Length: 379
Ligand SMILES: [Zn+2]
Image (cartoon, rainbow, N blue to C red):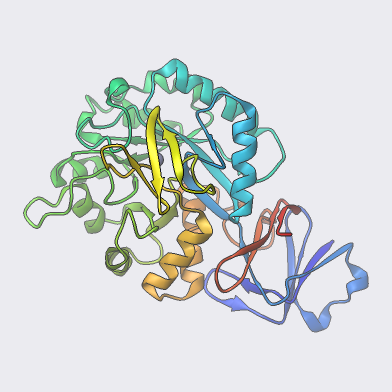
């Protein structure tokens, strides 16, 4: 049995002190520190007063440290999962973009092979962001390979696909939605020009999520509420990029007032330039310029972010002023529930995987543990 002492343990709705967290590959027990004897443990980690939370889960991330999930090399995912661990993420969905399917399939093959490896953060499967999107709201995705939603393209990889982003106005019949439901794939609306009415119909048909709320969607207009209006008017879960570039702090506060602590998920949507200095980079085959840690295409379109999950938490916490445990929830409990794996991870509870993250008041990550094994330790 291993033990973590002197931590501020973040549970669903409270932060515990004076307790010891006991774990192996799963969480075994939380006991008062007065009941704990160091001799009884194989390993004692002193958290030195830092927070200890369930590991963060990132449902939408393209890359970091110079690599992208679509680079057709095992080194890419190996490097990205190390980067995830450094930012407190213990499980994630590498996210593919709009490309031709032979290229996307090579990326799926790399993801499937990487899922079996034990290193860094866990790869839970993938998020397919494109090519089933809108030409009008493609954002930083290339329009060349955009097509109508067609499940037959996903069929050979349905075991690893966990989320697919679509523009629901492009659905031709109900086959796509039915197949996704049958295969437990979350359908997320994004990069879409859908009207409020189209978005409400999509939610009624089973769309359960909105991809990076506000970005890649028609702006909220009081007479044309669009997908954003539908997202705020229903209980659908929303991804949000809390880097203060993609979504203004005031909008983060407003959204939290409406969606609360259960319907928002922090994502990074980060690209290969994440965790690197400013300079020229690439996303979805297009040149991206990173200046002052803001990533744009040459024409000024905001490209993916260079945000890390711990920084997203820090900013959202500062922007909203809500209790820390409620912000952590947006990066742990909510994404785990979205993927229907909350019985295995997403919170510190007996029997769940010992996926843990240590950080201070600035949300600087000092240590990350996956299934009981330290995968990152700050020097
Ligand atoms: Zn993305």
